[in-house]
Structure formats: C-alpha cells, structure tokens
Image (cartoon, rainbow, N blue to C red; front, side, top):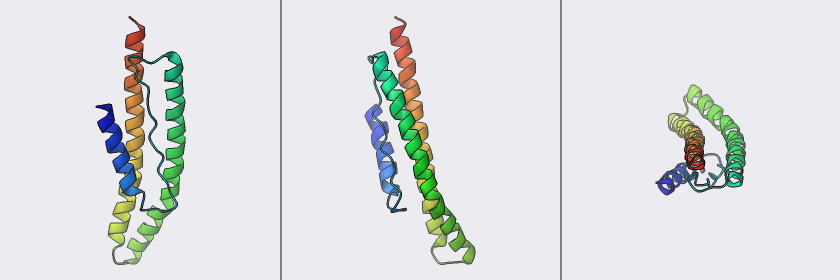
Length: 119
C-alpha cells in the first residue's frame, strides 16, 4: 500500500516537472515503518520529512513566477494562456498534495510506532 502511494506521488511530481524547467520537485523521503522502527529511525524519518517540506516550499516558490506569467498572458488574451495557467496551477497543486501525502503517511507511521511501543 505504501509503495502505491509513493509511486503515485512520484508520478504526480514527475509529470509536472517539465512545466518550469528551472524548478525541480523534491523526491519524497523514504519513511520508516512505524510498526517496527526504532526511536532513532523515527527521528530520522521526521528530519527527512521536515527537509522534504522545506525543499517542497522552495519548489512551490520557484513555480510562482510561472503562474504569474501565465496569468499575465491570460490577461493579455494570449492564445494558449488558459492552458498554460491550468498546467502551472496543476503543478503547484500537485506539490501541495505531495506534501500533504508525505505528512499524512508519516503521521500514520507515528501512530503505528506509538501503538507498537505501547505493547
């Protein structure tokens, strides 16, 4: 199940990276298995999630000028501008979704870790 989520996340980020050539989407971190991980592994996982979030924020900030430029072209009535804006917004939204997915999965692993540690 985790592999499917990570594969979908990589596909979403990879398919949008061509939009802004100077912007590179960060790779999602490999998360520890909360059911069997040690405290050190969980802390390392937390650090990798925080590093991913920081890199993803930088990526989204890199995308913002592309969105603004596409919006300006649309405002000017340029042909194809609506498609450019839609693609730029989808790329940005994919980055937001990727961050939410990583954070959500890590929270799941934390709950599994706590449940396993309580036994």
